[in-house]
Image 1 (cartoon, chains in turn blue, cyan):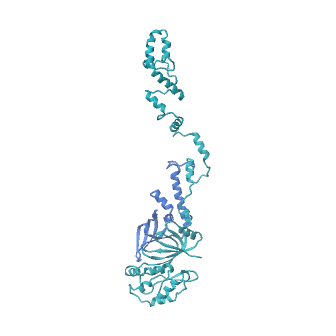
Image 2 (cartoon, rainbow over the protein chains, first blue to last red; image 1 turned 90 degrees about the vertical axis):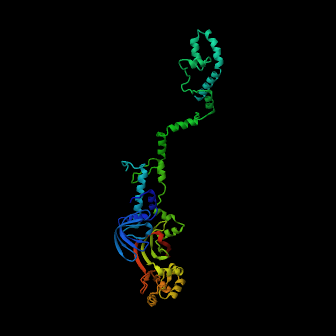
Image 3 (cartoon, rainbow over the protein chains, first blue to last red; image 1 turned 180 degrees about the horizontal axis):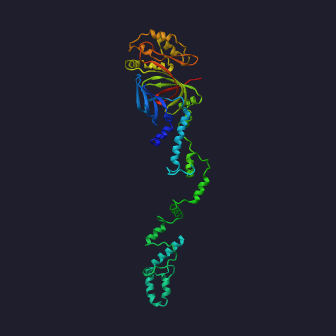
Length: 121
Length: 336
């Protein structure tokens, strides 16, 4: 989970995108705005809900199936994201938030990055 | 020290003023007091003495002894005047203190450190070894953390607050989903989490939706949009063959208490005229044909019968669904 900027991190932290980011690595179906569906493994999701999928089965609205290695979906074109049954929504969100929290505190704590970790750590 | 400085300088200036007169007076005196020149010289160069001779002091090989070590020297009277008036850098007590503090700025003042340490609140260390480098940082961190989960209850008093109530009380809601123009369908389920964009995470979702129409059908559908939309939004009930009857029923009764009319609809569907696309009646037959039973509020969808291959209504069940808020038309909490 790498954010390009602090702005992105804050946007993600305050929206439900963190849930989708917690799904990275899972196989899910994304229903698009144009009534087509894409089923594949979530590689990454950014703060604007742009989704990158790998090894995708893309079914357009007519039902025609296509196999794709890589698919990038613009955030705006997402309608639904099917969450796998084994994923706990609340837990995933909390995990993601704690990751962000840790990263943010790491940067501000030591007065910047330090070569050697603090003794207390 | 300062006062003494001023006095000494004043006396200095006074004596410089009187210098011209005294030097002329002392010159004739000199040959007379040859014997006492040694003492006189000392006295003449002594600033504080009465017999101070400024000319002598100026041209003497050695500098006259200064009575005070840190005496302030001026180059001319004007300088002295401005000093007296309290020009820039005048050593007022507050200025002196300021200058001292500025000079000591970078240096760690042990007294200050002690003071700050006393103000520090003792907190248990977090996993990251959160030892603060100063009390000011600690105070900043006390600010409550704001993230998507904490923002959910904050919405109280607003429509989103109502949605939060549905989350808390686990109220089943119906979320209307939009297509590019108009209603696509309805998702009925429980909301687990949401955000300000109305992105929602839902569980136990029953989605009933209709494929969008295209071309002619869409064009003609548009003509009837208002009434059809009204119908859909309020009832999500298909008007199958018995259009006028169904419509009336739909408009009269509330959405929850529709009598099941499963049997009549398939019959009426098959009896319908088919194939004419522009026909308003066929267009209406593609309305979502859901019939609710009074017991369990379960929707049973009926596909439009006949050779129509577009605008079919579907129902599916999804255990966990994430909906992007952009596609949400409205959220309808279902009263228990």
